[in-house]
Amino acid sequence: MLTPMDIRNKEFKKGFRGYNEDEVDIFMDKIVAEFEKTYKENVELKDKINTFNERLDSYAEMEKTLQSTLIVAQRTSEDIVANARKEADLILKETEEKRKEIIAQANTDVLDLNRDIDELKKQLQIFKTRYRTFLESELESLEAFFKEI
Image (cartoon, rainbow, N blue to C red):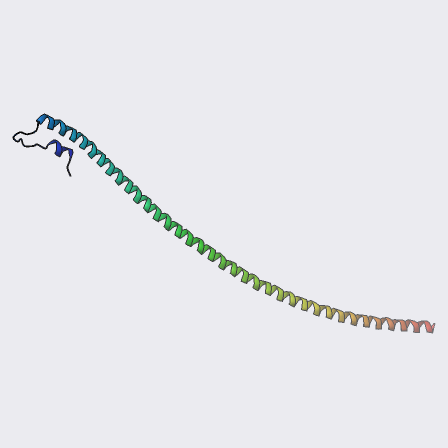
């Protein structure tokens, strides 16, 4: 690549009826000044491009990281939802089993209470019969006692 120093140090051979040296030198100085300015701008722009490319690479890396993070977060949330559903199903099954056990126990208790009630009714009937028999026997004894008097 041609540099400003290359232009500044360029010397032309003199020929027969050559150009005016002063005019060539002045023009070359203008070219060198413009070229230096353009060269510096070019270097600065290349530096900016490199900086922007580095930033772009950094942003691209951040984007990849964010995408990975989002994917992980999505999978994690899906796992949490799936686990919650499994746990809810398990709780429902356990609750259903417990409900059935409670109902079965309540039915058994009702049957036991009905048997106890029937047994108490029988005992009450026996007691009534015995008490009536006792009272009748006492009445007969009392009547017999009063007949003798």
